[in-house]
Each structure stands twice: as structure tokens, then as C-alpha cells.
Length: 164
Image (cartoon, rainbow, N blue to C red):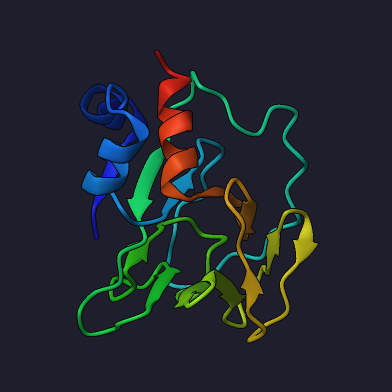
């Protein structure tokens, strides 16, 4: 799974035009937004729902971008959780061992909660365990207390250009 610190991604990709970016980075992106962190451990911590962020995406804050490119063995899904076997490993105590599953369909990407202890939300609406919901570009996701943003390539390039 390819990942970049946003600051490094800006240096290597923000100069590209939309077509060049899409050719070099054709996949959708999940950005782990900067925010509070709770150390992971053997068990998932139970957390109160996080307070809404006044400015949820700050160009000045460092974030980590993950390419949603499924492994050859998993075909059309990407997993997120604390377990080292997940495609995207988030070592935060409010994230379950297997928290979210991203599913690629003919119409785009879907996300589903995997029965996590602290729940998940998509654009402020709780996700029901095992019930996939469609993702739209720039959507905000919460997994426990960890914030993410989902981007299609065109919108990811727009985000990178905000740093210049």
C-alpha cells in the first residue's frame, strides 16, 4: 500500500496537471487527518465520540495519505484497523483490530464498519456494522476518534495544490 506524508506528496506531485496526476496516481485516496492520538494496546479503548473539529482539514497540519489500491490477493477491498495484517494500519487505541472495510464496486468505493467497538461515521452519520455506504469524494470518515478524508484523484490533486 502506497502512502505519503502530505508535505512529501506536495513536493512530488502538486506541480502536475490533472491528467498527469491521474496517470501517475489513478487510485482513490484516504487521508489520515492530523489530530489527537491514543496509543494502541492489546485491547481497543472505549472512547466518547470526538467533538467536531472547528476546521477539520488544515493545510498547515501534517497528514498521511494512503492510496486505496487493493492488494492482488484481496482484489477489490482494502481493510483498515490496528491489526498488522490490515492494508492500512492505524495504531490508535480507539480503532478496532479490524475497523473499516473499503470495497471497490463498478460505481465507485463503498465503506462499511466491521463491528468496531467505538463505531464509525460517514459525513457525521453513523455507519451500521456490515452495511456498506457509498463514498463520495471529499467525504469525512471517523473510525473511533480518528478522522479521515476520502478523495478521488482530481480532488486529491486539488488538496495538494492548497499547500503551495
